[in-house]
Amino acid sequence: MKTTHQKGKGEFYSPSQAFSCEPSSVLTPWKTRYRKNTYLFIYYLIQFCGHSWIFTNMTVRFFSFGEDSMVDTFYAIGLVMRLCQSLSLLELLHIYVGIEPSHLLPRFLQLTERIIILFVVITSQEEVQEKYVVCVLFIFWNLLDMVRYTYSMLSVIGISYAILTWLSQTLWMPIYPLCVLAEGMYFTYSHLYSERRDVLRIFPVKKKKV
Image (spheres, rainbow, N blue to C red):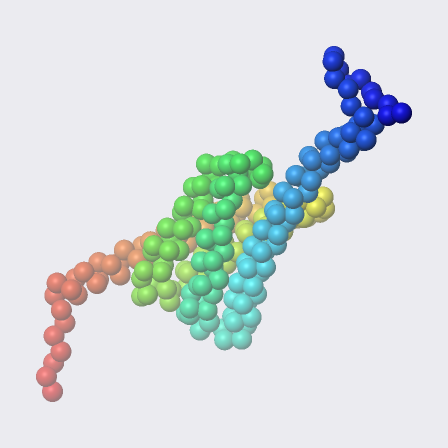
């Protein structure tokens, strides 16, 4: 004889239904959290690998070729840098949907600044790409991102180191003013080269006849 259990007023269910309903309701939030953490871990890992490759490439090139390596920094790592910065736009979506605990406006301003400098200013002016300030600016960006993505990646899986936590919370204090200074110098170089190009376009230099 099949037994039934009372579910509520006027509702009955069998024991098989009772055992099949409870586990799914318990596991659903756990599965959602697991998928979210897995996605964030993979995203942080990709960003960490990209920025680590950039920083390692710049370091090896500097010790191998000295100051000459700073001239063609953009040609050597510009593509990977653009890929990493483009991928970081996903963080705005992460914050908006609530899977990443952060403030939307500060992150939006930081990403907008980097996108404008990298894609609009640096990429469009080949004359300024060879300046040392580009190498310095990339170093600052990668130092901040390497620490931030390492801390975020380990936090997702519940691992925490005191030194890493301290760096993630304090490293931006000395680096951000230096980034602003480097960005200001770059805009100055860019403005001077633009004026020079405009002057040469209006008053072209005539070649002397031999």
